Length: 381
Image (cartoon, rainbow, N blue to C red; front, side, top):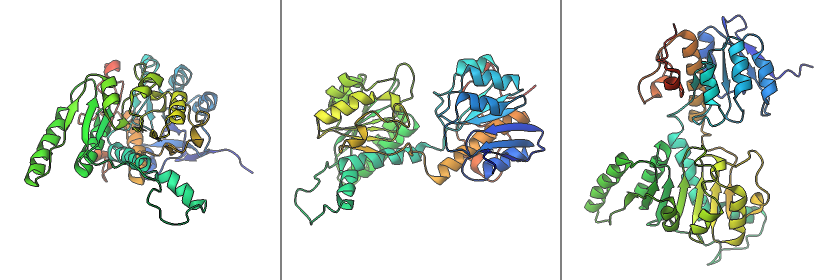
Protein backbone atom coordinates (compact mmCIF):
# COMPACT_ATOMS: atom_id res chain seq x y z
CA UNK A 1 0.00 0.00 0.00
CA UNK A 2 1.34 3.44 -0.97
CA UNK A 3 1.19 5.85 1.97
CA UNK A 4 2.96 8.68 0.14
CA UNK A 5 0.67 11.76 0.47
CA UNK A 6 2.37 13.56 -2.44
CA UNK A 7 0.89 13.31 -5.92
CA UNK A 8 2.69 14.49 -9.04
CA UNK A 9 0.97 16.22 -11.95
CA UNK A 10 2.64 16.89 -15.31
CA UNK A 11 5.81 14.99 -14.33
CA UNK A 12 7.76 16.13 -17.40
CA UNK A 13 7.27 19.86 -16.71
CA UNK A 14 10.31 22.10 -17.08
CA UNK A 15 9.72 23.74 -13.70
CA UNK A 16 9.03 21.97 -10.40
CA UNK A 17 6.53 23.49 -7.96
CA UNK A 18 5.50 22.04 -4.61
CA UNK A 19 2.06 22.77 -3.10
CA UNK A 20 1.80 21.86 0.57
CA UNK A 21 -1.98 21.30 0.61
CA UNK A 22 -4.46 20.19 -2.05
CA UNK A 23 -6.32 23.34 -3.13
CA UNK A 24 -9.96 23.68 -4.21
CA UNK A 25 -10.91 23.65 -7.88
CA UNK A 26 -8.99 22.72 -11.01
CA UNK A 27 -8.09 26.05 -12.62
CA UNK A 28 -5.09 26.73 -10.39
CA UNK A 29 -3.54 23.42 -11.40
CA UNK A 30 -4.26 24.07 -15.07
CA UNK A 31 -2.49 27.44 -14.77
CA UNK A 32 0.64 25.83 -13.36
CA UNK A 33 0.75 22.95 -15.82
CA UNK A 34 0.13 25.37 -18.71
CA UNK A 35 3.23 27.23 -17.49
CA UNK A 36 5.17 23.97 -17.98
CA UNK A 37 5.32 23.15 -14.28
CA UNK A 38 5.57 19.74 -12.71
CA UNK A 39 3.33 20.11 -9.65
CA UNK A 40 3.88 18.05 -6.49
CA UNK A 41 0.81 18.30 -4.23
CA UNK A 42 0.58 17.08 -0.63
CA UNK A 43 -2.82 15.54 0.12
CA UNK A 44 -2.23 15.09 3.83
CA UNK A 45 -4.72 16.89 6.12
CA UNK A 46 -1.98 17.39 8.72
CA UNK A 47 -0.07 20.65 9.09
CA UNK A 48 3.36 19.98 7.59
CA UNK A 49 6.35 20.76 9.76
CA UNK A 50 9.40 22.60 8.49
CA UNK A 51 11.54 19.50 7.99
CA UNK A 52 8.84 17.77 5.95
CA UNK A 53 8.51 20.78 3.66
CA UNK A 54 12.29 21.09 3.38
CA UNK A 55 12.47 17.44 2.33
CA UNK A 56 9.76 18.06 -0.27
CA UNK A 57 11.72 21.01 -1.68
CA UNK A 58 14.67 18.68 -2.16
CA UNK A 59 17.53 19.50 -4.50
CA UNK A 60 15.44 20.96 -7.32
CA UNK A 61 12.43 23.20 -6.76
CA UNK A 62 11.55 26.32 -8.73
CA UNK A 63 8.59 27.51 -6.68
CA UNK A 64 6.20 26.73 -3.84
CA UNK A 65 2.69 27.47 -2.63
CA UNK A 66 2.42 27.28 1.15
CA UNK A 67 -0.19 27.71 3.86
CA UNK A 68 -0.68 30.22 6.67
CA UNK A 69 -0.36 27.32 9.14
CA UNK A 70 3.29 26.83 8.14
CA UNK A 71 6.32 28.79 9.31
CA UNK A 72 8.15 29.97 6.20
CA UNK A 73 11.39 31.30 7.60
CA UNK A 74 15.14 30.96 7.08
CA UNK A 75 15.18 27.15 6.92
CA UNK A 76 12.65 26.95 4.11
CA UNK A 77 13.67 30.01 2.10
CA UNK A 78 17.33 29.01 2.23
CA UNK A 79 16.36 25.50 1.12
CA UNK A 80 14.19 26.88 -1.68
CA UNK A 81 16.97 29.20 -2.84
CA UNK A 82 19.53 26.38 -2.79
CA UNK A 83 17.17 24.25 -4.88
CA UNK A 84 16.96 26.98 -7.52
CA UNK A 85 13.67 28.44 -6.33
CA UNK A 86 12.60 31.92 -7.39
CA UNK A 87 8.90 31.94 -6.43
CA UNK A 88 6.79 31.55 -3.31
CA UNK A 89 3.12 32.32 -2.73
CA UNK A 90 1.12 32.13 0.47
CA UNK A 91 -2.35 30.69 0.02
CA UNK A 92 -3.79 33.57 2.06
CA UNK A 93 -4.10 37.32 2.01
CA UNK A 94 -2.22 37.52 5.33
CA UNK A 95 1.44 36.55 5.60
CA UNK A 96 2.39 36.81 9.26
CA UNK A 97 3.60 33.20 8.96
CA UNK A 98 6.25 34.38 6.48
CA UNK A 99 9.62 35.89 7.41
CA UNK A 100 9.65 38.60 4.74
CA UNK A 101 13.10 39.85 5.72
CA UNK A 102 14.58 36.41 5.09
CA UNK A 103 12.65 35.95 1.86
CA UNK A 104 13.94 39.31 0.64
CA UNK A 105 17.50 38.46 1.70
CA UNK A 106 17.36 35.31 -0.37
CA UNK A 107 15.84 37.23 -3.29
CA UNK A 108 12.58 35.29 -3.32
CA UNK A 109 9.39 37.24 -4.10
CA UNK A 110 6.48 36.40 -1.79
CA UNK A 111 2.99 36.39 -3.26
CA UNK A 112 -0.36 36.52 -1.49
CA UNK A 113 -4.03 36.40 -2.49
CA UNK A 114 -5.80 39.73 -1.83
CA UNK A 115 -9.08 40.98 -3.19
CA UNK A 116 -11.12 37.76 -3.15
CA UNK A 117 -11.72 37.40 0.59
CA UNK A 118 -13.33 40.77 1.27
CA UNK A 119 -17.06 40.15 1.02
CA UNK A 120 -16.77 36.52 2.14
CA UNK A 121 -14.93 37.38 5.35
CA UNK A 122 -17.19 40.38 6.00
CA UNK A 123 -20.24 38.12 5.71
CA UNK A 124 -18.77 35.76 8.32
CA UNK A 125 -18.09 38.65 10.70
CA UNK A 126 -21.72 39.72 10.35
CA UNK A 127 -22.91 36.11 10.74
CA UNK A 128 -20.93 35.75 13.97
CA UNK A 129 -22.25 39.09 15.20
CA UNK A 130 -25.86 38.00 14.75
CA UNK A 131 -25.19 34.52 16.10
CA UNK A 132 -23.69 36.02 19.27
CA UNK A 133 -26.36 38.71 19.61
CA UNK A 134 -29.23 36.23 19.26
CA UNK A 135 -27.78 33.21 21.12
CA UNK A 136 -27.94 31.12 17.93
CA UNK A 137 -25.35 28.52 18.92
CA UNK A 138 -26.63 28.15 22.45
CA UNK A 139 -30.25 27.91 21.28
CA UNK A 140 -29.41 25.26 18.67
CA UNK A 141 -27.59 23.11 21.24
CA UNK A 142 -30.57 23.53 23.59
CA UNK A 143 -32.97 22.36 20.88
CA UNK A 144 -30.84 19.43 19.69
CA UNK A 145 -30.48 18.23 23.28
CA UNK A 146 -34.27 17.81 23.48
CA UNK A 147 -34.68 20.52 26.10
CA UNK A 148 -37.19 22.61 24.14
CA UNK A 149 -40.69 22.08 25.59
CA UNK A 150 -42.47 25.02 23.97
CA UNK A 151 -42.39 28.76 23.32
CA UNK A 152 -41.63 30.95 26.32
CA UNK A 153 -41.66 34.76 26.59
CA UNK A 154 -38.14 34.91 28.00
CA UNK A 155 -36.41 32.09 26.11
CA UNK A 156 -32.96 33.18 24.87
CA UNK A 157 -33.57 36.90 24.91
CA UNK A 158 -30.90 38.51 22.77
CA UNK A 159 -29.72 41.93 21.66
CA UNK A 160 -31.41 44.05 18.98
CA UNK A 161 -28.59 45.40 16.82
CA UNK A 162 -30.64 48.05 15.01
CA UNK A 163 -29.42 51.56 15.93
CA UNK A 164 -26.69 50.20 18.19
CA UNK A 165 -23.07 51.37 17.86
CA UNK A 166 -20.63 49.16 15.97
CA UNK A 167 -16.95 49.72 16.64
CA UNK A 168 -14.54 48.51 13.96
CA UNK A 169 -10.84 48.04 14.61
CA UNK A 170 -9.06 48.35 11.26
CA UNK A 171 -11.15 49.74 8.41
CA UNK A 172 -9.43 48.27 5.40
CA UNK A 173 -11.34 46.42 2.70
CA UNK A 174 -13.06 43.93 5.01
CA UNK A 175 -13.78 46.30 7.88
CA UNK A 176 -15.28 48.84 5.49
CA UNK A 177 -17.60 46.24 3.94
CA UNK A 178 -18.78 45.16 7.41
CA UNK A 179 -19.51 48.81 8.19
CA UNK A 180 -21.52 49.28 4.99
CA UNK A 181 -23.48 46.06 5.60
CA UNK A 182 -24.49 47.07 9.10
CA UNK A 183 -25.16 50.72 8.25
CA UNK A 184 -27.36 49.92 5.26
CA UNK A 185 -28.99 46.77 6.50
CA UNK A 186 -29.47 47.55 10.16
CA UNK A 187 -29.09 51.28 10.71
CA UNK A 188 -26.13 50.86 13.04
CA UNK A 189 -23.95 53.77 14.07
CA UNK A 190 -20.28 53.21 13.21
CA UNK A 191 -17.14 54.34 14.94
CA UNK A 192 -13.76 53.07 13.84
CA UNK A 193 -10.13 53.11 14.90
CA UNK A 194 -7.44 53.09 12.24
CA UNK A 195 -4.15 54.79 11.49
CA UNK A 196 -5.84 57.01 8.90
CA UNK A 197 -9.35 58.19 8.15
CA UNK A 198 -11.31 56.13 5.63
CA UNK A 199 -12.71 59.03 3.65
CA UNK A 200 -14.31 56.71 1.09
CA UNK A 201 -16.35 54.98 3.80
CA UNK A 202 -17.32 58.27 5.40
CA UNK A 203 -18.43 59.64 2.02
CA UNK A 204 -20.48 56.48 1.42
CA UNK A 205 -22.31 56.93 4.72
CA UNK A 206 -22.90 60.62 3.98
CA UNK A 207 -24.45 59.68 0.62
CA UNK A 208 -26.53 57.00 2.28
CA UNK A 209 -27.81 59.51 4.81
CA UNK A 210 -29.08 61.68 1.97
CA UNK A 211 -31.10 58.70 0.80
CA UNK A 212 -32.35 58.04 4.35
CA UNK A 213 -33.55 61.62 4.52
CA UNK A 214 -35.76 61.01 1.48
CA UNK A 215 -37.32 58.09 3.38
CA UNK A 216 -37.82 60.22 6.51
CA UNK A 217 -35.30 58.12 8.43
CA UNK A 218 -32.88 59.50 11.00
CA UNK A 219 -29.22 59.70 9.93
CA UNK A 220 -26.57 57.14 10.86
CA UNK A 221 -23.11 58.16 11.96
CA UNK A 222 -19.64 57.13 10.84
CA UNK A 223 -16.61 58.65 12.50
CA UNK A 224 -13.03 57.82 13.30
CA UNK A 225 -11.89 57.84 16.92
CA UNK A 226 -8.26 58.48 17.76
CA UNK A 227 -8.28 56.27 20.85
CA UNK A 228 -8.90 52.53 20.81
CA UNK A 229 -9.91 52.78 24.45
CA UNK A 230 -12.63 55.26 23.52
CA UNK A 231 -13.97 52.89 20.87
CA UNK A 232 -14.09 50.00 23.33
CA UNK A 233 -15.84 52.08 25.98
CA UNK A 234 -18.43 53.42 23.53
CA UNK A 235 -19.33 50.55 21.19
CA UNK A 236 -22.06 47.99 21.78
CA UNK A 237 -20.36 45.62 19.35
CA UNK A 238 -16.70 45.48 18.29
CA UNK A 239 -15.43 43.74 15.14
CA UNK A 240 -11.68 43.25 14.68
CA UNK A 241 -10.16 43.56 11.20
CA UNK A 242 -6.58 44.58 11.86
CA UNK A 243 -3.37 42.94 10.68
CA UNK A 244 -1.23 40.92 13.08
CA UNK A 245 2.15 42.41 13.90
CA UNK A 246 4.13 43.38 16.98
CA UNK A 247 1.82 46.34 17.62
CA UNK A 248 -1.41 44.32 17.48
CA UNK A 249 -0.39 41.15 19.32
CA UNK A 250 -2.75 40.93 22.32
CA UNK A 251 -4.24 44.26 21.29
CA UNK A 252 -7.36 43.15 23.14
CA UNK A 253 -6.08 42.13 26.56
CA UNK A 254 -7.58 41.99 30.06
CA UNK A 255 -7.33 45.75 30.54
CA UNK A 256 -9.10 46.55 27.29
CA UNK A 257 -11.75 43.88 27.78
CA UNK A 258 -12.54 45.55 31.11
CA UNK A 259 -13.20 48.82 29.25
CA UNK A 260 -16.02 47.30 27.21
CA UNK A 261 -19.66 47.33 28.22
CA UNK A 262 -20.66 44.35 30.34
CA UNK A 263 -23.08 43.18 27.62
CA UNK A 264 -20.91 44.07 24.62
CA UNK A 265 -20.17 41.71 21.73
CA UNK A 266 -16.63 41.08 20.45
CA UNK A 267 -16.06 39.56 16.99
CA UNK A 268 -12.69 38.39 15.66
CA UNK A 269 -12.21 37.22 12.07
CA UNK A 270 -8.71 38.69 11.67
CA UNK A 271 -5.94 36.78 13.45
CA UNK A 272 -6.18 34.86 16.71
CA UNK A 273 -3.24 36.42 18.58
CA UNK A 274 -4.80 39.89 18.31
CA UNK A 275 -6.93 38.78 21.28
CA UNK A 276 -5.45 37.48 24.53
CA UNK A 277 -7.51 34.28 24.56
CA UNK A 278 -6.82 33.41 28.20
CA UNK A 279 -7.97 36.88 29.24
CA UNK A 280 -11.07 36.54 27.05
CA UNK A 281 -12.03 33.23 28.70
CA UNK A 282 -11.68 34.80 32.13
CA UNK A 283 -13.68 37.87 31.08
CA UNK A 284 -16.52 35.81 29.60
CA UNK A 285 -16.71 33.65 32.73
CA UNK A 286 -17.09 36.68 34.96
CA UNK A 287 -19.41 38.59 32.61
CA UNK A 288 -22.11 36.16 31.42
CA UNK A 289 -23.92 38.89 29.44
CA UNK A 290 -20.74 39.61 27.46
CA UNK A 291 -20.56 37.66 24.20
CA UNK A 292 -17.93 36.87 21.62
CA UNK A 293 -17.80 35.34 18.15
CA UNK A 294 -14.47 33.84 17.04
CA UNK A 295 -13.34 32.46 13.71
CA UNK A 296 -9.64 32.47 14.64
CA UNK A 297 -7.70 31.37 17.70
CA UNK A 298 -4.42 32.28 19.30
CA UNK A 299 -2.79 28.86 19.04
CA UNK A 300 -4.73 27.12 16.28
CA UNK A 301 -6.00 24.48 16.25
CA UNK A 302 -5.74 24.42 20.07
CA UNK A 303 -8.09 26.70 22.00
CA UNK A 304 -7.43 28.24 25.40
CA UNK A 305 -8.65 26.01 28.27
CA UNK A 306 -12.32 26.60 28.98
CA UNK A 307 -13.12 28.46 25.76
CA UNK A 308 -15.10 25.60 24.18
CA UNK A 309 -17.29 25.27 27.28
CA UNK A 310 -18.41 28.91 27.37
CA UNK A 311 -22.05 29.31 26.36
CA UNK A 312 -21.61 33.02 25.64
CA UNK A 313 -19.00 32.44 22.92
CA UNK A 314 -19.73 31.39 19.34
CA UNK A 315 -16.81 29.54 17.77
CA UNK A 316 -16.20 28.31 14.22
CA UNK A 317 -13.00 26.68 12.82
CA UNK A 318 -11.35 29.45 10.75
CA UNK A 319 -13.90 29.38 7.92
CA UNK A 320 -14.38 33.10 7.27
CA UNK A 321 -13.03 32.76 3.72
CA UNK A 322 -14.68 29.38 3.17
CA UNK A 323 -16.91 29.93 0.19
CA UNK A 324 -16.16 27.96 -2.95
CA UNK A 325 -15.73 31.10 -5.06
CA UNK A 326 -13.25 32.62 -2.61
CA UNK A 327 -11.14 29.54 -1.88
CA UNK A 328 -10.91 28.65 -5.58
CA UNK A 329 -10.08 32.29 -6.34
CA UNK A 330 -7.30 32.22 -3.75
CA UNK A 331 -5.88 29.10 -5.39
CA UNK A 332 -6.00 30.78 -8.80
CA UNK A 333 -4.18 33.87 -7.51
CA UNK A 334 -1.51 31.79 -5.74
CA UNK A 335 -0.94 29.80 -8.93
CA UNK A 336 -0.81 32.97 -11.04
CA UNK A 337 1.80 34.41 -8.67
CA UNK A 338 4.08 31.39 -9.04
CA UNK A 339 3.42 30.79 -12.75
CA UNK A 340 3.89 34.48 -13.50
CA UNK A 341 7.22 34.57 -11.68
CA UNK A 342 8.47 31.48 -13.49
CA UNK A 343 7.25 32.82 -16.85
CA UNK A 344 8.93 36.20 -16.39
CA UNK A 345 5.70 38.21 -16.38
CA UNK A 346 5.57 41.79 -15.02
CA UNK A 347 3.88 42.73 -11.78
CA UNK A 348 0.19 43.63 -12.03
CA UNK A 349 -0.12 47.37 -11.47
CA UNK A 350 -3.84 47.59 -10.66
CA UNK A 351 -5.63 47.09 -7.34
CA UNK A 352 -8.44 45.07 -8.94
CA UNK A 353 -7.27 41.47 -9.27
CA UNK A 354 -10.60 40.05 -10.47
CA UNK A 355 -9.38 39.84 -14.10
CA UNK A 356 -7.23 36.90 -12.94
CA UNK A 357 -10.40 34.97 -12.14
CA UNK A 358 -11.77 35.38 -15.64
CA UNK A 359 -11.34 32.79 -18.38
CA UNK A 360 -8.11 34.26 -19.75
CA UNK A 361 -5.92 35.57 -16.93
CA UNK A 362 -3.62 38.54 -17.65
CA UNK A 363 0.03 37.75 -18.36
CA UNK A 364 1.07 39.34 -15.08
CA UNK A 365 1.82 38.50 -11.44
CA UNK A 366 -1.17 39.43 -9.23
CA UNK A 367 0.46 40.36 -5.91
CA UNK A 368 4.01 40.37 -4.48
CA UNK A 369 4.20 41.77 -0.96
CA UNK A 370 7.97 42.32 -0.87
CA UNK A 371 8.38 43.70 -4.40
CA UNK A 372 9.42 47.14 -3.15
CA UNK A 373 11.89 45.67 -0.66
CA UNK A 374 13.42 43.66 -3.49
CA UNK A 375 13.67 46.79 -5.64
CA UNK A 376 11.87 44.69 -8.17
CA UNK A 377 9.39 45.44 -10.93
CA UNK A 378 8.40 41.83 -11.44
CA UNK A 379 10.17 41.34 -14.77
CA UNK A 380 12.82 38.61 -14.86
CA UNK A 381 16.16 39.37 -16.50
